[in-house]
Picture (tube, rainbow, N blue to C red):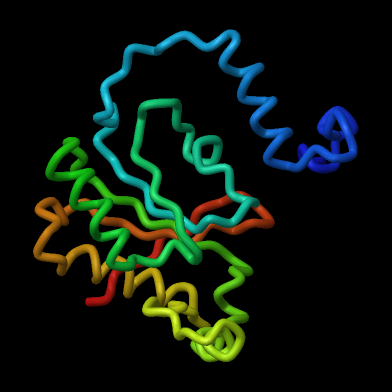
Length: 181
């Protein structure tokens, strides 16, 4: 499988061009044939998907989603942080979603980090991050924790359809994780 970075047509026009330059150029090509789909910001399927930012996961393709179907919230590990709660709250209360799908994945980079990462950053830059790394060693348990964080948030009104999965990066299959009882 090749990526755009490996493709010869993806090479920047000049040796001074950056990846961002290439992406902005690609946007110009995209915009030249773009037509406003006339969609509302409210997802058609009334679902929000929280997933890891891992570049190996094409969420829309993996879930059979089209533009406008869902809200997509991505971060390192796909963990439910305060900012994810913020986004889900806005998604539900202001934009009509009712379901939440949480997706972690196999061989996640957060499995190889520890909270020591924050200490290393503090030593390097002179300031300790206020955020937690949210590393984990058991992906299934971390999905359960994320489900619980969504279900117990006082800000998220619709918690009866919150489901969690692990995406296998080798097969593309989702494996559902039962919530903690």
